[in-house]
Image 1 (cartoon, rainbow, N blue to C red):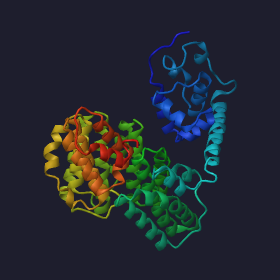
Image 2: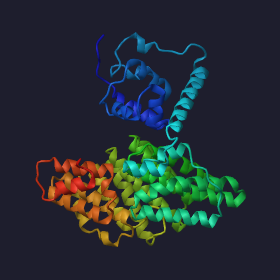
Image 3: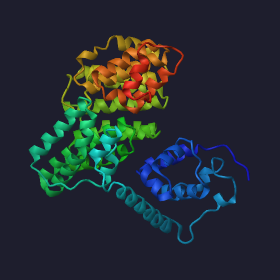
Image 4: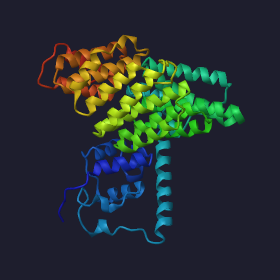
Length: 431
């Protein structure tokens, strides 16, 4: 029985898992693999056994025929796998049972290890989020002003790029916000839902930065809580982080459609709603760029730029500002993604990063400039930009994406003084 080339098995599994909101830990528990093994399977570095692959198809709702010609041996066994009985009903029941078992396994794994301890021991600020989302700590409701103050404190940690502090605080904040929302009624419940939505937005932002599966769950819950609040601004903020998770799973076109639809529903005449609308357009522009859709990306960037010309800079948004500087940062990032980094050089030259309000956003600007120079083959300028990232936000430069960029630069053809020490200091070079 031969092997055939064809579908990308890792991409199929990863996309279906992300769509189903299932973590690597849960999928592994349902199929007899560890989370790291699932990660290797999704990266096409490990070929699963035939029986395990069929179980993955069952858990994720993938038609086994989609795997024909990939890592599955071509043969009748794959094409004829069926469930006896009323197909739709029995398949749905079977999948629910499998997922229930997977969720239980994921929850069991956290017994005896708190989220804060996980973040501290692993060095990953988001390490405890995935477990905490499926089993929030016990918490009592608090007065709404106190809950709001706690959320503002968490946002301050995010904007300062103090990700370890944020990772430690989020499980307790989520639990308290959920308890407060559940205990409230009427308008108070709507207000608590808005605060809970923003706590989940922060969770999704942090998880996305660390490439954690928790981003999907947090973003989905953020949008649910935001819609319950009845306020368009939290809905827009939550929509943005959900679209980021969609883009990261390869669904850039769906992300663009979702963002433009949500942006159209925001009131352009009300300043805060209009500012959130601008951030949705910017995220949509970058999402389109990652899919190679230049015309849509540039059109959305131009629309966002027109918005900020009509509006004053509004610094009070939750995680991303609606300013001309942000438009320029996203334009540089989009041009990098489109494969035309040279077009961003003049944009970068006119960007006054020192005037950007938060360390997290300043680090984002330097990150995109580093990627621009790297794509153009300028190793010294890439390293200069990376050092600026470190100066603005030391924890930002330790993110997986930044460590990968540093490692790529380190093992490239150019030799840059101080780069090896930088790589060792930031975790891109194993000690």
